[in-house]
Amino acid sequence: MVAKPLSDRPRAHPANKKTPDYRGFPTNERPTRAVTEDETEARKAEDHRDADAFRILFYTGIRVGELVTLRWADVDLDARTLLVRRNLSAGVETEPKGRRRRYVPMPDPALAALARLGARDEFITDKDYVICNRWGRRLDVSALRRRYQVGCEVAGLRRVKLHGLRHAAGSILARVADPVFVRDYLCHSKLSTTDRYVSAKHRPEDFERLNRAFSPSRSPPPTRCSGPVATFHKFHKFQNLVDYWVG
Image (cartoon, rainbow, N blue to C red; front, side, top):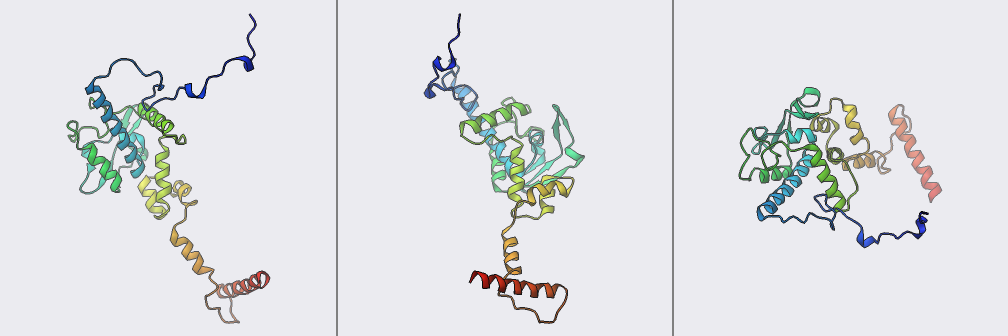
């Protein structure tokens, strides 16, 4: 039997393309099993839980393993802080990376997400996980990553790793905070690790400082001078030269 050339084979119509829904099922191949009202409510609660988990990751910059091992005893809503003292490595709860426990201050969106999670009817004692499944057990990190990727695909967003929310938090924070604060917030052991965020981000006051430094309106120094003052005098001569050629 001779196979047909590729050009002669029927092509799938774009309308028949199997696009996964937010749970990973193709939209035209969802399970036909009837879903009870209780199951529908449970899935809705899981969706809201996942959304708040992603918010906490982004607005605090903590690691995924630190999030899923977080317990309510580590949360202080009044003080607006999280105590990060555990991480997840190869499915085992261990100390945080670098064996460094830390307090993480929370902005309003992270505080609101934790308040919503704390308003559930069960699994809210000090020993319970903040992010847990419907049975109160620790959430599976791989499953959380898959749901995040599927959600990005359905929303039409660029594929970014779940850990990328931590990098995004560092990049945004570097626009308004000094490198030491960003380092401590993300718990970097070295300031050089923080440079990846700081070196490419500049705060508004940085541009104001540059404008003041190179402003031609500053009074020129005396003619006879040396050192940094002489350099400033040369700058004014250079500025006059540029103005001459442009004018």
